[in-house]
Structure formats: C-alpha cells, structure tokens
Length: 267
Length: 366
Image: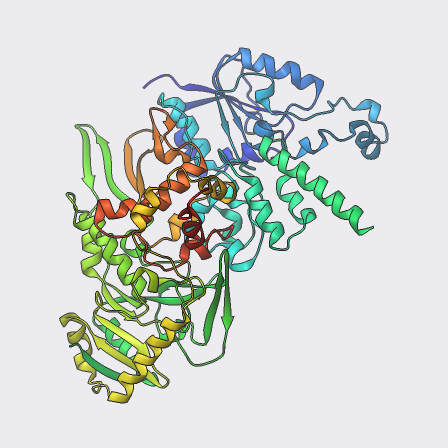
C-alpha cells in the first residue's frame, strides 16, 4: 500500500459550497479516506495538522489583507495547488466590488466600517501565487473534484473537458431553452462540467463554470440584442460569480455602457 | 412497383399494436420540453396529434393547431442517430484482478426499435451514416447490430419548415427507398407503401385493403404541395469545387465573428459522426471504462495534436465543418454529407444559416 496522499483544504472568501461538494461524494468518501489523509479540512474535522501537503485545494478569493499573507504561507508548504470554484478561480460574486467604490459599499453595509479589514478588490488565487490547476464552477462538480484528487494520486496530468455546455445538453436530450423558448442562455459560451443543470430545469445557463476557451461573447450578445433582449437583461448573466473572468468582465462592462447609453437616450 | 395499402385514422392504434406485438419498442415523435422529440411511446395518445412547429434560423416554437393530424410538422431537435449512434457508449471495460488485467468488450446486440415517423431526409441521413460506419475498411459492429435490429416506418412530409431544403439536396420530401413501410397522412387515414419483405410480413396480418386510385392521387398531391412549400434552396452545382476554390475567402472571417463554436450544429446534424474515446478509471485504478461520446470539430480540443489544436480559431473550425460536410465528404464517401434537413439552421443559437453562408462564400471577391 503506497503512502497516503496528504490533502489540505483551505478556505478564503467563499460560501463553503465547493468544500461541501467534496463531502457530497458520500459513496466515495470512505474509499477516498483509504487513499488520502485529510490533514487539513476544518469543514469536516477539527483534527488539523500542519504541512507540508501533497495536494492543497483552495476555495475562495483573496479579499482581506490577512489573505495576502496566508496564501503565501500555504503555497510554501504545498507540492500541488489546485483552486476549486469560481471564487478561487475568478474572484467570485464578491469581485463585483472591483472597480466600484469600496469605501462607499463599506459605509452602506456596516455601521462601523473601521472594524472591517477588507481589500478594495476580490481577486483569484492565481493573481497571488502559482496555481497548478483551476477547477471551475459554482460550486465545483463532485465528479471533477474526485477526478483531480485521483489524477494527483495516480500521477496523471490534470485535465477536464473544455467544450461548451451545449454539447452536454445535446448528449442528455435536453432541448435548447434558447431556441425553443427564447430564454437567453450562456451555454454556448460556458465551459461544461455542471452537467447542464440549469437547462435541464428549463432555465438559461448563467455561466457559473466561466467562459470557454476562445469564447465569442459578442457573437451571442449581438444576436440576443437583435432578438429583442435589453442590455439590462443580459448584464446579470455576465456579471455574477465569474464577473472577473476577462471575457465576461469585458462583455459585462460593454453591456453596462450600452445600458446607460440607452437610459440617456430615453430621458 | 411497391404494394400500397390504406387504413383509416381510427385504425392507427391497430397498426401500432402490431408493431409492438411483433416485439418492437416503438420510437416516435412525442412532445417533451416544448418541442417534438423522438422517444418511446406506448400508444398514439403519446404522439403530437394537432401540433405543428414554426422554425426560423435560431428559432423553434411548438404550436397547437387542434386538428386531428399526427405528422403536420418538420424535423425537430432529435434525429434517429441518437438511437443508431448513441451519444454515450461504453465500448469496453478493463478490470484488475490478482492475475492481472481482464478486458471485456461491450457488445450492443441492438434493441429492437421500430422508428415511426422517419422523414425522407432522415432516411438519406441513415444511408450516409451506413456508408461511414459499415462500408469502409472498418465496420462498427455495434452500429450494424442496432441498424439490423431496427424497423423503419417512414412518413412523407406534408408540412415542411422554413428551414427545410431537401429539394436542393435531392433527398425529399417524398421517401423513395430505405424504409420497411412509408406512410402518407391523407385527409381521413393513411396511405401505406410497403418497401420491404419485412414490412410486408408486418402488415399482412392486419388485412388492410389495397389503396384506391383516388388515395394514390391524394398522396401524390400532398407530396407535390410539400415540394412547392420548400422555399429555401442551396445551389449544389459543382459545389465541391466551388467551395474548395474559396478557402481564403474573407467571408469565413465574417461567419467566425458570429459563430460561437458551440457545437450545436454538429450535435443536431443527422450525419455528423465524430466521436472521441476516453478511458475513465475508478479511484483505485482497478476498473477502467472505455467510453465513446459524440465530439465535434467545433471543440478546440478536437484537433489537438502535439498539445495544441491544429484548427486554433473559429474561422478554421467553421471552414472545416462546412467544407467537410459539403465538399470533402464527396472525396471521402462519394456524396454530400448534407441532407437538407435544416436542423443546423434552426438549432444554431445565433441563427447561422449555412445556405446563406454558402451563397456568400461562392461569390467571387473583387
């Protein structure tokens, strides 16, 4: 029996949902525990052990001054570092504050903002330390998470499919919600991995796995606007959990400008 | 000359019962998720009686007509390739034991399916996939088993959609061959053309009478009327050479600005046959499944060689798809890979119409 893989799971600014995706792997957890030592997983166990770690999974974005230091310390104790989820990979929903007035937000939310230590931006882990692999999703997919751990265990190259959500819809007999119902859907622009869960329930994809490689956001927004959808309606599709992913950020900003121009022309 | 019979609309359940009693699971048009799809049915009540569809580029809407008709619509998002060339297939399994590895191929014997409502363009598509999977150097035996196990009840189109162009591809709207039975929906019943000995065996016990001259004439006029309604065209004259002479046309870039490279056109295409194979190990690496699934030339990873895609932008991917479908398919298989069903136009989320693009690409640049 080879030595167990020392696994650390650390959390930054996030909702804990991605860590829960690992706990949701109920059937595989016992088998996994045979192969992996959960050395640092406070979400699951109060037994916390210090590094070094063979594999670290990072949930959450860098959003406080303390985080800046903490992530460096983790990196130094880690052989392979994988970010899990939209927050760690693209800044998360909290990255909506980037570019906005952080101080104003603080005053609005907290009676005594001076007690809150917060950075003006929420940024992906890869902005701060080198990252070996990024797992997308809000939350991540349990199957992909297990695959990454298994890849590390068996010395395989990390890899997840990079095709669009559309292919997953077609493979599962899901009728296109955009073509058959006129619902704006980011599926054609979004990397697969979720199993097309939103279209399966007759909702449009809102891109929680982030943009595909070489995605053509303008191609879709041009069509949707010509089809009668407003810029305002499309903004939340791009500016949500992956708002800091470069393609979504650029398209979101462009739609914001169009929306305010439309607003002015109505006045 | 094939044998023509007739049965009344109220005898339709008898026909369906005969298919089922002969051991077939009947796959037919049915309504699901706001569209007419192909799935298993138990009775004619599961069929979209009184429905039609409206189709435009990037647009499909189901419409209720309330009439008594069963087949007054064009092809929808599904094609029969879903059953003959399933999107996900287990090819083999490897299991580790004390003595080493054992390898087991997965053989698909072929489910006895009766496909009810196969249109002329879809018969053409099956013939094209037969050539791909059965008539080359390597035969896909699982495909062969599925194909051999199937029974085909075709239907002549009465109401084509605005995206149909089978007349340009010479595949429809009337079914000419490749079926066991072909139906035409008349005003009060069905004309039934028997196209094979298997078809004959199936219908003989039903004792349906021979069709009258009037019924044959009505059927002809339905097909003629359908032909007249098809307005979309694609000029196929010397199309292979015309397209291959335009590989550097500026219009490829113009299409690429609109194309999302999302794979929808290839997934809904009834002839697209690309797949990829992956090995999926369990956590302990004691069992490895070899799985095959639909792939697409629009996926950047599809053309990956030595770690990088050969077709590394949407322009080259769209060009690959279109020129393969309409031009180099001739070189590879001796015919066009397009049957004119219009699915790639309807189900493109940004309404790219290949007939329009082909016309633009074949125009000489100044």
